Amino acid sequence: MWNHYCIERRETIDLTYHLRLAGVNAVFFHAGMDASEKQQSIQSWKHGATHVMCATVAFGMGIDKKDVNFVVHHSIPKDLESYAQESGRPGRNGSEAHCLIFFRFEDRTKHLRNIAALPDSERKHVCLNGLNDIVKYCITPTCRRKQIVQYFDNNDPSGDLCNHSCNICVKNASVQPVDRSDDAIQVLKCLESMQQIEPNVTIKVLISTFRGQCYCKQRFCNCYGVWDGQG
Image (cartoon, rainbow, N blue to C red):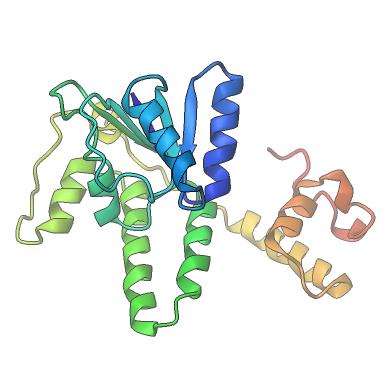
């Protein structure tokens, strides 16, 4: 049994659709569904008619299914506390459990939009710190379990290692720094040129123009395709 966590409601539907196209029996769950739809998805998943649940964090409260073996975060959770809780759902029957996070900075931007909408400034600060903690967890080449243990217990300088069960320890991973200063300068130059034509340039349009995607060619012909052919 699998449980996939997503940030947005639309994401649960899209992921379910693509899994079904691939022949995987999946259902979705989010807070916007009516009660009967929610119950139908839950019962199908709980009784084994469906093997994959694609859900937002609205799913999970009061759900105790012991034969879950995989929890996949299709996007990063909002903080480490949420991740620790959600990743603790598999393996309750004593079988081997696996947790996986798909991380990209675009998902951090989605969380930032939600944080910006909060009315309370103190709450914004707390949520931003929590988001930065989970991003740090994803990009730091240190044992995953050790990071979580140290996060919840600052008095433990060593933490408990995972016994070579996380991706860092299994692969003995290391981060090799790469100087991308020249690339960053090219992006800034591209942006400056584009803003002379159109002041309000979105990140999506900047990326598309920089990469040389065809629909931007006429709008920004002078800065079109700076990165085209470079990978």
